[in-house]
Amino acid sequence: MLRWEAYFGGAIRFLSDHDKTAIVAYDLLHIGAYRGETDAARPASFVIDRNGFITYAHAAANILDRPDATASLDACAAAARQY
Image (cartoon, rainbow, N blue to C red; front, side, top):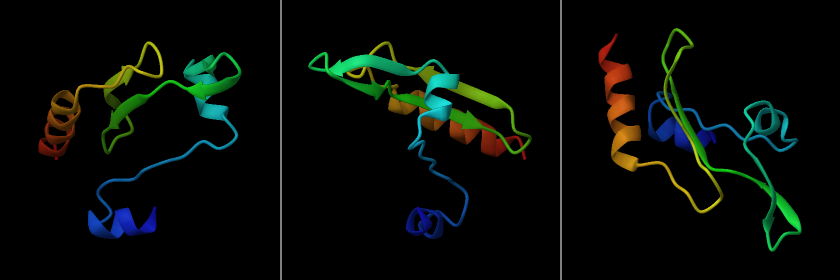
């Protein structure tokens, strides 16, 4: 994670949820996602502005669904322009 933060000048932070606390809290757990045996997090993207407000959110319907990259990037640019 530190390499990404250095590359982007600390402007972007990537988070991981090894114990699934946030995954469960945001209702992103896809039970039986892999061959009906292993649970996994559904892909999700959130853009959070400097005030801590979520300005964009995409929670996938399943593990194959992915957020639209253009919409995610547009949301990041809009959040950056606010300041």
